[in-house]
Length: 247
Image (cartoon, rainbow, N blue to C red; front, side, top):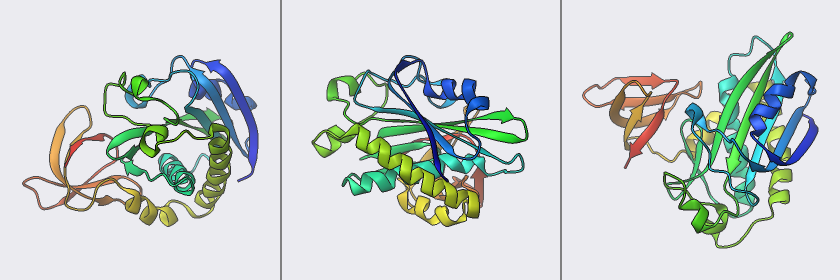
């Protein structure tokens, strides 16, 4: 997919919110990117607040449109996770994927991805936001209410944020085009290899209404999560929720 518009704001409440509001005016035949130096009302999954201090981190949202008949848009954040992993691997940084939307380094969160959709005339707009802790220091990381790290802390040096953004824009544009042409199938094995869990790892899983315990099995062919529940030899597939404990 061709790279389209690129917008940058010194400060903005939320890149995802800006894209949703301006979606009708953005190109429908290319992928656009919005970035910010600081977000004042950043959101994560389930309306959680994303700690977003000024400067040093990647706060961005991608936008593209797909046909109304596409039923696999939920895989786009997984494709983005693979794009991020590819870019960081070139920087000698290794991340792992925590289903459904997080990236980890040594079991600590380094990035989160949030996807939203916007109904447009004859098209569906897809907004994929990512917050990546790049040059955040230990003091700021300590303010986060769950184990978190940054590329700078884990790798021991700072990163060129502009270069990372440019590389990610290019990589995701390429991966996105493959996804639009071929679907999720070419990406499934890559995502499984990137998973923070291996088959048989004990995990706890919640969908906010109930919590289950069992063993991690695999990522399903549609990108959902397969778990072997405790006391049940059958594999159960979950399309929503999160892994809250493992190991």
